[in-house]
Image (tube, rainbow, N blue to C red):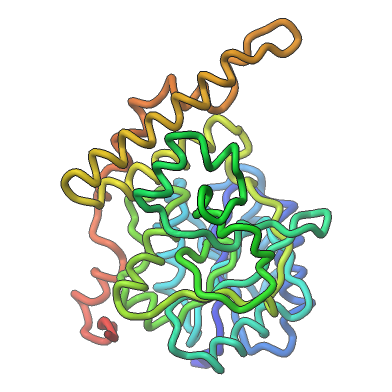
Length: 331
């Protein structure tokens, strides 16, 4: 059986039109790259799976009867992938100028990194900085709690997770490579154990990036691989999306120990309270904006502060390793 150089992994949930455009862009912009495309559909109700089967018969389609979430969906797709590299790609992205081939080329020339990412643009062609972030730390959470990361947004010191004013236009090591465009050796991804499946959506890439660095390999961004990323296709409601993001951030903090964990959770709660207070004091059209995302997050803090619960199953890679010793950590 032919093993391609790269397996492009897309986890889709109700993104029919955007997924079609994404798959077309891959076909048009990746002709020089020996690759396969694996789409895992998370029980979409908009006909996404049927569209892929009818219009893209070359795509390997995996259909699930329930929404597994992003992390587990990726793990299951990677377990079936055959490529030397895996490239995670969001369904609401458009590949530009052989971006996937360029990313593979960069990884081949610089093999000592763990996770690789590129440069993302919004639908208007402007920089979308979300291809990477700085690591969540006690200092970044202090800045969040005090509102400094909002008031001084983009400041390298007081909004450190934003990575300052860097335009993502140079090769640079970063704390977090996000899952909208993420490349890794399949062997490395599996050796790390894949994504932590307690993360349903958001945060799984930050957690994996941390483990990749702890295993001895830094993460890197190259501007030669550029895509368009619309963002938020699977979670359009702003309040719901913020709840998911805060749940992920709380889960990351709960991996810390002792006073750091206590302080980190308090900083998250304080930062949400401050932003909700500021929004609540703002009147728009004579009505209080109590439905604003930060107000929702404050009201639902009992929902997100505990973080994601432990996964209720053995991760797919652990199952494979139990059956066969073929896939083992490589550090």
